[in-house]
Amino acid sequence: MTITRGSVFLLCIAGVTLGVLNWAVKRPLPGDVALTRGLQALLGQSPEWAGIVTKSATEPWMWAMTGVVALLLWMLRGHVAALAAPIAFALALATDGLLRFFIFSPRPLATLVAVAKPSPSSGLPSTYGLVTGATIGLLMLVALADRRGWARAVGWVALVWLVLGWAARVTMGGHWTSQLLASYALSILMAQGVLRLVRVR
Image 1 (cartoon, one colour):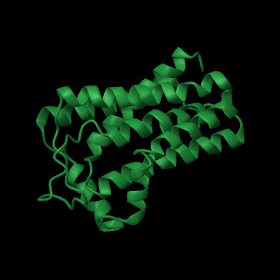
Image 2: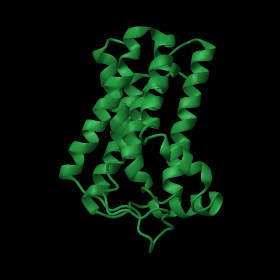
Image 3: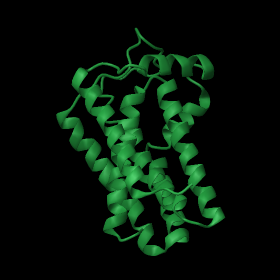
Image 4: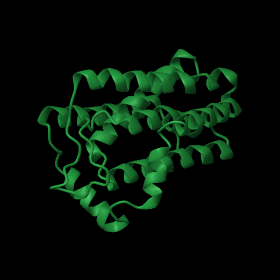
């Protein structure tokens, strides 16, 4: 599997569009409720592993995750590529803080699905989605574009982590799928821009 800039860009635009629609209608999009209920029926309402995955995007674990990604990027493409990790991470945090001043979209409601930790804050953007997309998503982009077998293995692990993150946050009722995918998409778009900034193909 080879990732091209064009395919990533189109997928991310589609994801961001989901977020815009979710924010515009201020309610779950078609399929959001069904996906959440399906995952909760399959995995449980608040599995222990989901809490562990969620913590990866909180302090101090998010700093460690960024460091590990920087190290792997250094192994893949050198020290210049490693700089992309902290830059993308900082950009994700800044974007999260900025967007929360201007937009609000309700998180999943306990009347519709099970919610492990109710919160009055906006479900969009997802801090988890932005932080994880800007770090793990960045690693995925670089690793899956590499032709070496071990590098692609790293890329697939990164992709699996993104899927696990989606399952964890949705299963716990932290975000609707449309909200999390939009946050992933936005942060991966930013990560792609950072790669171009530091001239990593």
